[in-house]
Image 1: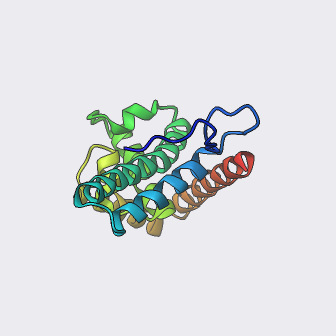
Image 2: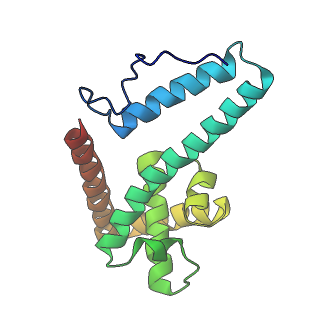
Amino acid sequence: MDRLPEHTFFPFSAHPFCTPPESEELADTLRRVLQRAAAGNATPQLARLARHALAGLRRIQDAEGLGAISALVAREFHLRPAVLKSRAGGQRTAFCRQLAMHLCRRISGKPFATIGTHFNRNHASVIYACQLVERRMARDAAFGQFIKQLELQITEAAANTATANA
């Protein structure tokens, strides 16, 4: 394998005149490179490795977004975020988990299976949680308003984080 000359400059290296890119920018660049490798004229082994790495990158990005939503829900209900992912089955914990699942689906639009994996549940549990919260919102206007306010808080927090990172 050919070696790169010592004067080769990579913008993400520890070069003293280079500011490191934001994590999202770096992840987007990595995703584009991996997509090219998976779809291009790469060897079958490299293409398979690139597809595997892309799947891992997607899982990481999904978990990051869903983790932020579930952490904000946990904070709102004075719980540790890990409790929402645990097997704890108390009524209060289960209801908070169902709210978090519903908000994850509504805000992120991720598939039920992805949300279920995040909460250590199956897709049917997420479907049930979403239906349960929707039914309660339909019959209880105050609860519906609370959920809409919580959703607004989460989306505003995400927007503030995005602008602070920009």
